[in-house]
Image (cartoon, rainbow, N blue to C red):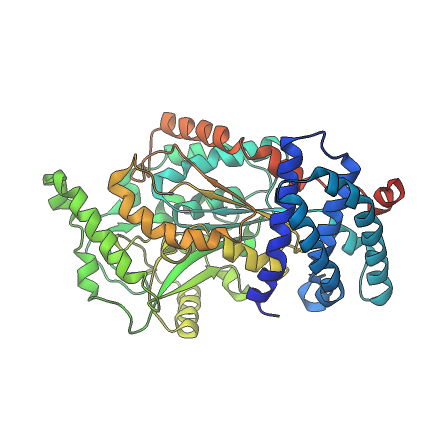
Amino acid sequence: MSAVERFQQVRPLEELEVALVRATLADPWALGPGEEASLRWAISLARLGEVGPPERSVSLAPDVAPFREELVRRLTDALERPDFAALGAFAPEAAARSKQLRDSLLLRHDGRLDPQSLDAELREKKLVLSLGGGGGTSYVYLGAFALLEEHGLRPSLIAATSMGAIHGLFRARSHTYDSGEVLAALRALSWSRLFRVLAIENRYGLPAALRLYLRGALLRHFQRDDGSPFTFRDLEIPMLVTLSGIRRGMLPRPLSHYEHLVEPTRLALRPWLLKSKLEEVAAATSELAKPGVLDGIAVGQEDWTNDFDVVDAAGFSCAVPGLIHYDVLRPDPRMHELLGTLFTRRDLFRLVDGGLTENVPSRAAWDAVQAGRIGSRNALILALDAFAPRLSTPLWLPLQRIAAENVRAANRYATVVRAFRQTPSPTQLIPSISTVVAAMNRGKVELSEDLPLVRKLLAPLPPLDTIARAA
């Protein structure tokens, strides 16, 4: 079964579960706890596809297909209003039929389907974070991380783009989260340490006005005890970082066009040119984002890409065309071999900002979940978007609108989407500590609106046998 077909199967069920939980949060007394749990058990069973690790998974989608089709029909009608009387009346039947179906699955696949694994797949939903790019706007994610940690909600996977990838790396370093580590790293940063205006060779990245020296700024936070750099295999939380690859022969303009698109020295003397320069960057980005030019890449998705240096992956993901250039020019045979393999397999010419293909990478996260990356296909994908178009940031609207096009498509794969309303400016890449603290507080406040839904969806369902007996 293709990924598209699988998505078409499970998406209606995920939407029904979210609608059911939202309805019961809005009216807590409309259904009893057992009735709601019975309906959610039925949804969870109907959603089953592959169960178990990829190398020995069992496909259950054909077995549950008739139940799935009937359940979607009945719940769609009942949740449209919602009709709590109809939902309550259906709950005992849903519990009984769920138990019958689960028992028949275990009997039919005896010896191949482990009862404990099936129970965990059905009862426990894992948290996956999808973090968007957007420069300094993404500091609100630190507040989101802190809020989730306060409530014991820890991600099993992080997929991230651009500046979101940098924040994601700090979150993925450890299962527990300490915002103090990020603040300490930020205190040591400066513009001169992070960026330089240099005309240098470009090998893998698209040339631009500013050269990003991310390794010099952050590598010490992502090193093993022997001083060697972290790869994706060293992160305690599995992670994906999205890049955009320009296909060979598809670059719309000469390399020199992007290198000289924004001239920082001239702009410093004529700051009134900033608006027109950003419009030129948006125009160049729009050309690159046309169909057929770019290939979306999720480093960490294919196993061999987990050998990439995490800082290099984040650096390429931050490379905004015309503005920021990242490259690997140091003598590093391992990374050159990996990049060479990537370029050959995908027939690429250069790498640029992952936000051009998937600025909030919920599709990449969903693909990883369905491939068995986190040991379960039952996940809540929480998409955090700090770069959504806002009239309050008119200078950035052209770039925000470009990103919004692919974000809309990717959001279909997210369970819950939080588009932050108040953020720092995209240009505040190295803000003051007070600005970061304010952004963290704002991130907490805004995500707290979604917290009841997220917590309830992630809470384990009670055992089916208990529900069925009560029903």
